[in-house]
Length: 68
Image (cartoon, rainbow, N blue to C red; front, side, top):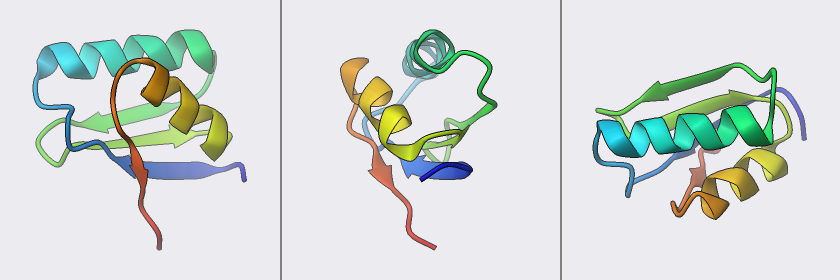
């Protein structure tokens, strides 16, 4: 599935975590728009949901895709 996908990443707890996830997504999905709300612990990515989830997991975090 492509488009905007939102994940809850409960173990992303600080600015360092945010930077790690942002860098991983920039490298793994170059050119994709990424929005991170560290207070809500959410990551929104434009692109392939499965690929984005894999990149976040490979960075050491546990994303759960939000269902709408």
